[in-house]
Image 1 (cartoon, one colour):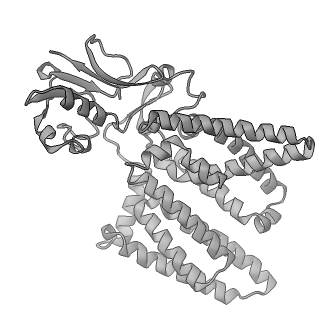
Image 2 (tube, rainbow, N blue to C red):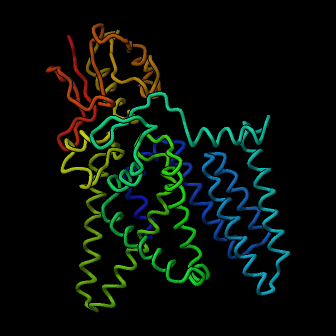
Image 3 (cartoon, rainbow, N blue to C red):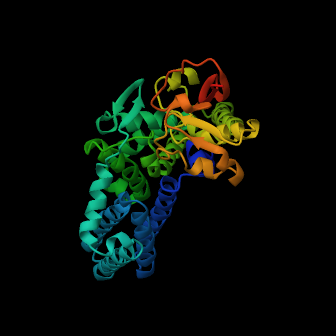
Length: 404
């Protein structure tokens, strides 16, 4: 239950759940696939293999990185077959269930992904290659105060982003949980595999994707949303760390007071996170902890804030509500999210009558309003006639200037 609470009280995941139709869907099906994988490994029947194959194929068809789950399925089942073979158990039945899993995985992956219908192997490997080295046309990301090419992000890009955009209590307990698992695995790999197979699955499900994008030097941008799917595993490892902390306190002190203090500290952190989420709704996507900076102004100078352009909708609503003109000319800096015309999702959320009044121009000299969410322009603009802004902790995350 605490793990479910951790997942809900994760500001960036919560915010993206309203509009991110790729990364959150991938995260959700990863959770389902992990369950079907553990269920299959515990009881290798044809029914469980079939269910796991359907879930795995859906995951791959959402994002090809979902191939991690079949890889883990083959790895763990092969190890089990080897160990069971030594003990003389039903080798044939388990092997056939694995073959059934592979067969239905291929069939359903092709069935649910029309792109594969014309040339299954070629198109699949094309998708895999595109994922590893996606040619993002914009190319620049703001990271640690510097604009760098997305193809040249340093190896620590993902670890740093996870550390600064996740509640601190999760980060702290994750570090303890991760070290605990590694120590147990190092001490006795065979025993750990037999007794803690689920924890090993969690460890690999988190570590392999992160290591893969680092080693392949994959193109990364928009914080770490492409790896949101590892977040549930991050939280489970955090829970293992939290369990270890409470166990240590109970063994060493035996004091009910100290145990209650630990509970209070965790609760206060969760209350702080929940308070922020309520106060800032729906802009939880700009959440940072203290590791990122002392305040939002400092964070704004080092990292991207509203890269998704979520704040544009409120800014446009304010303009059409307070400006009675039949034609409102707006220049948007930067318009990369929705194309050169900016005629995209943000405007579609307005009333049809209001949409007709908006005219987006490419030259700021022709505009009545200048609007920006500071992407690729972390500095303040040299205009003094601010018309509207949304501010968090004193820092503007979207601004509108009126020229006349």
